[in-house]
Length: 204
View (spheres, one colour):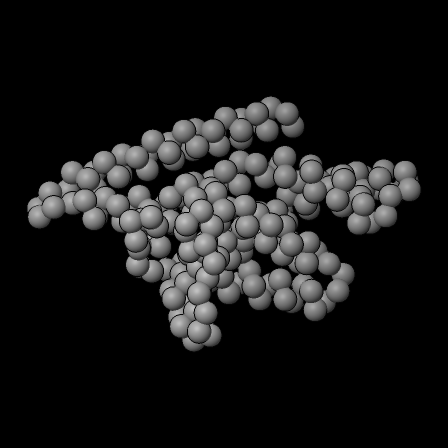
């Protein structure tokens, strides 16, 4: 679960940043391409995306995904695409929330538009969107349970699948334990979101 979450979130942030910048581009083709990506992967159920990316695509194209720490990357790729689509809109909102005076000040110091975006706007935008980014991380942790549809081995079982595998006939103890472990992970993160939101409001 941790491996799936960490890598999917990291790749999702990268995809989300790229898509957000393309959405704000002056080039129409870039804006359209980003909009299509965002709308498609926000509109499709995550389970369907996981099936298509993790199962159907390798069969259709006759290839196998490489592994990260012994975990096949098909599920990671699917979750990254879904997370990136949602994070793109969050990051775009953060970029647009940065005062335009910041860009003007950077340009007056001799920075190009790209440098102003990279060194001034994007760092401030990420500070603004930390609470919603953390919320997306919590959702992603829970979405890893959907990867059970791809089939698992002893190495690649995520938390829910592990609980199901250990559950005997009419014995749901292991599933209760799995649920408790999810809460142990997600509740501190949701509390962190609340703290970050309060601090951000106080800073403003």
